[in-house]
Length: 273
Image (cartoon, rainbow, N blue to C red):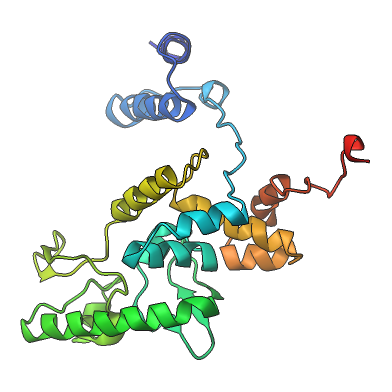
C-alpha cells in the first residue's frame, strides 16, 4: 500500500467518520512513522494529502463580561484568573511562576521559558498587588511548615539543582501557586510540592461562566485573548502588545485586530450613519 491507500483512509476519516483536522493529521503522522521508521518504506507526496488546519478567530470577552466572570471567582482560582487577564499570561505560565519571578518594586512579572522556550517581561497590575502580597504571606507559612518536615524541595529545570545545591529548598524558587498536597516526583522519586493543577482553574472558570450566564465558550486562555484585545481598544500599539504576549511574529498578534468591537480597521457600518 502507498499514497493512494493512505489518501483513501484519510478521506474515510474525514468524510465518513467526520473527524477533525488534527485527528486526520495525527493519523497521517502515525502511518508515516510506521512506513518510514518501522517498515523503512519511503512515502512520496505526503504534503499534498495533509489536511490544513483552519484559522479561527479567538473568543474575546467584553469588559462587562470579564468583570462579571472575575467577580464570581474567588480565592486562589480568582487570583490566578485575574493574573491571566491583567498580565496576559498563559495558564501554565501563571501556575509555574516562582516567588522570584514577581518584582513588586518594578511592578513586573518575568516569564521564564515560556512558549518557544522564550523569556519575557509583562506588567503586574497595581490592583492585584495587595492580593498577591497577602497570598505570598500565606504561601510563606506553608513553605516554613514544609521546610521543618524536610519536604520543601521543588523541581528545578535544566539540572540547576546540581549546579546550585540547596537551591531547590530556597524560598525564591518556590511556586507561587502550589498544590494543596505533597506528591512523589516521578522524575526523581522525591516527595515535594508541585504547582497547582491547571484543571482546577479550568473547572472554576467553567462554573463561573455558568453562574453568570455567559454564553461564550470561554476558557482560561480566553482571558489572555481579552487582555490583548482590550489593550488594542485602549489605543496601545500592536508592537507593544506583541512584546507583552511574547509572540515571535506580529502577524500572530494581528488576529486580535479582527475581533475589536469597532471593526478590524475602525470602519463604521453604513447603517450607523
